[in-house]
Length: 304
Image (cartoon, rainbow, N blue to C red; front, side, top):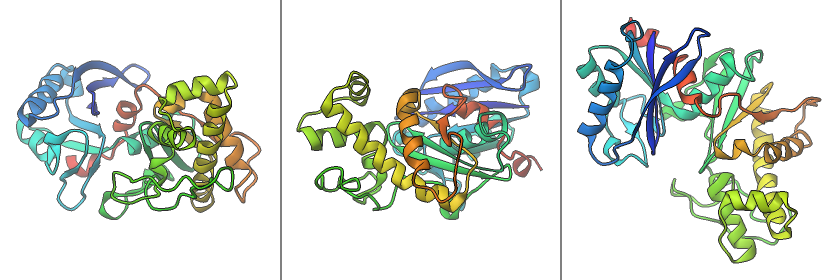
């Protein structure tokens, strides 16, 4: 059995399966951002603190991407891990196999195997957090694309800056990937804040925008309508291409279930297939998706 990790920009969390087979959070430590040695020691200590019967291998969910050619990390918010082969570094210290995947991939695996999508053949899981992410599981297997990239519907210059005519053009916002007009810049929390400032001239945090929308504030309502429209338009294309039976949503905005329902209603009005039941739904594992999903990573390729 594996010791599972969820390595994020704020915390490193670890855990292992309980009697039900679901991985629970057992340990947590602040993520060292600038010292690789401290980060490695933190992970090694957490592994060694796990029960011996759980120390067959290490399975990691991590923010960022693993280059399938070099196994080096492409990561923005943990500087000490940039271009590092974390799997190799940990394997040499722990003397056990290490398997690793993006956090969106692990969300998809968690929901496809034991979450809201466990009866579905095709699953497209999305993250609406600080930014926009996604991952696909087809017939129970994680889809890994060229360069380690797949399911990243948040990037690419596809945004209609008028949100289908709901507003006058807001222009395009620069994206961290180097392009302009990515869904990542107008969807989820950071994007909602961009849109609100463009429409009103003032900054407001996403959580407050959602709260104001619930209270009927006109400016917040316009922002939420515009953001949900742009997210729904992009997502409807993915739904038509992939044909998922369900789209689980993780990330901070997934906690706003009324906002997710608004997106779902719009998406289902735009898809070719008729979805009589909710399609875009709150993920079951909002707090520990990375840990739960990491346990389903294909460890066979590193153990054989």
